[in-house]
Length: 195
Length: 195
DNA sequence: GGAAGTCGTTCCGTAAACGGAACGGTCGTG
DNA sequence: CACGACCGTTCCGTTTACGGAACGACTTCC
Image (cartoon, rainbow over the protein chains, first blue to last red):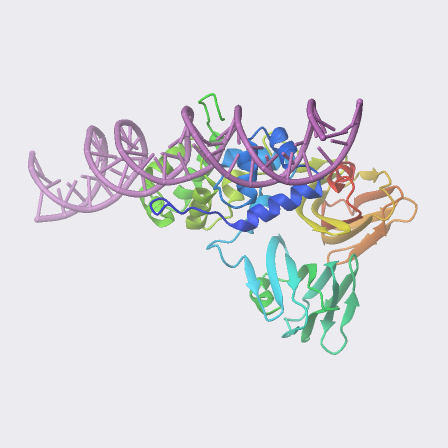
């Protein structure tokens, strides 16, 4: 930023914004009107050609009735990475971490590329994984007995054995993964890196 | 903003920023250097006299190793709610929205107050809810046949009938709720407001 | 098929966020 | 008690995000 003239912002924000707007059936003009900002601002934002101010982001998030973090991703990442992790077939993004006295939960969004099967090594005993399929068909679970789930279905398994993730049907799959780790040992994020 | 010349941003952001910076024993100059922004920018921000861009906020949050939401508070847009919705027993925060051609998924974080049971009216046919318990024990599902789940367990139900949410055992419960809405009708956010 | 409405994009002048430099104040140090 | 190092603030020229207006494309209605 600053001195070189180029200042683009993460284009994912623009895609997010457009997705949320269209999910609510709002036109760009209508959203701009409700948020009290110019159409040029919304348009530029969706195209990733503007670097919005906080005030603008607040106004738009409020008009969409979402927290600002739904637009900025903002997955709590210190250095900017650690947010999204790429495996051979799975791209996982950390959404939230819940820490309870004896348990840690981590919530990931998974994108599973079609045609490849990804194997993850065993986690420590007691770790369980819960997967909700959002799009496509997913085969996941213990390597020797994986389960299959379509949109809106769940798969759960104890992940103290090697397990796999794959998208079936030649279509990229989309899922929410909740990892439950007893104790307060190392973050499951490390493990999810290979997940 | 816009045309009237005054543009102040919430002074709480400045206080948060100064607090986080001092908690880390960083001088204003040092923070500015690490974040790669001007001292004038940090100073103005702490005094609430600037309306920062997202890029600036990212840089500073990264230098402090905190998620941006730690600076912006963000728990609900200007109006105070909108992002977080409060029912009689349930406080729900929208985490993500996934839109597929024929279906919309919305992911919520739920806090369920102990001792009260909240009833939600029927959603349109085809809507299903999937709940993962993170903390406490939750009774949820169709009003005439609710199910019970503890940490790490799931409950799913078709929500085209009245349904309930309650925390058992006198302890506040914590859960992740995924709502699947077929078609591209109105946002499930409206419905979740009473959920 | 013209008028009126809405859509999303682009152009443009203005307001303001930006980084760098200059400033005064405070602290150790020789 | 000069001197330097650092602090946080203020000033300033440049860059750019802003909203309004104009635009072409598309629908709908008469």
